[in-house]
Image 1 (cartoon, helix red, strand yellow):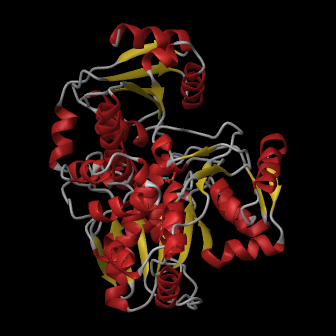
Image 2: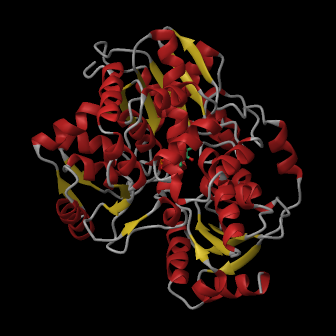
Length: 492
Ligand SMILES: *Cc1c(COP(=O)(O)O)cnc(C)c1O
């Protein structure tokens, strides 16, 4: 393991002691710029509901905040809500009304079964599971969306304004968005899901809240059409009238909130093993694993970050061929990872290219026009310092579900199965304990589990009530006009 993390804390600490004024200035001036070099500069408060930068890039913090050993200690030992508050504060929370973040995050987390944070359980020698699937909608996205919704609602209250969150979904994001925004005072939520494109379980998660501020729309089209309609609606006059906003997975505030569980769990494992641990993360849009990278950059005791994919293996192929090149997306038993353009990877690319926005822009342009870009040997070496990647074909995912069931009496979801598969194939030379990140509850993907082990996962009580509740949604044809008129009717 290169770079002793304790040593780096001491280095930060002496920096702070020598340059108190500079330290304060840096925290105070922490702001966000585009990965593609445009000159937009935004504060954390302005980023709450922002998508891409106007040059098409993603917002990244201009530099990593520097923290003292006391702060790092809080981040590694506290409860989830305290850690998430501390992270947002470090990343420019001083641009928000005082106390708002702390209030909002604590209030959101009090709705969770485990308000202290997601369980980290030891499975066998050196192998751990970080169980991110016990939130309100049984997927990790709750940990970011629930606090973000509360922060947005309180901010709007403060400004005496209203907004409407628009979201196109293939399942988990829509469920987490509906749950997070249901019954909010200042925000309406509209989710567009493709007819036949989400499971019955996921559809019911979106349609059974009974909340007056939620409008689930079943669109006669596929996910891409839903996405297109949402993008088109942002450009219409109705956007200002309804205050359309996005909370999609490129939202940096979501990612910062997620880094809180990497601080916390790496701290828990470090106190047992005395070594930095590795994380294996089932990956699609690269948001979750980028949150782990942020924690590592700030000094959390983390070794390697291991990406896993299903047959949509755009990232493992980058490691094998040094070329990022999207393929046709194939449908798999782990639909939340059926992605060939891993949007948040652009943020890592910005670091790999030495924060050079012009170089990132060139690569992303080439990805858009020729569907590919290449990384140099030096860039690959930088990437491989922190990351590795595994592809898990469908048959292997099914075997992993079976072997984890036999070995640990634990039923896992097909996304998490890709990570367990990688855990079983790690090189012997790998140092430190390894934490498998479980991204969804198996009950959401009951058919795949049944196929693997011939049994169905037990459905949690909260979900049983949800499945029995009556549904309410509207059906629309796949045009922006039809969606707009459904929204106007509901929220006039
Ligand atoms: C969203 C999702 C993923 C992918 O996460 P990214 O942050 O997009 O990489 C993996 N598993 C499940 C269950 C998800 O819902």
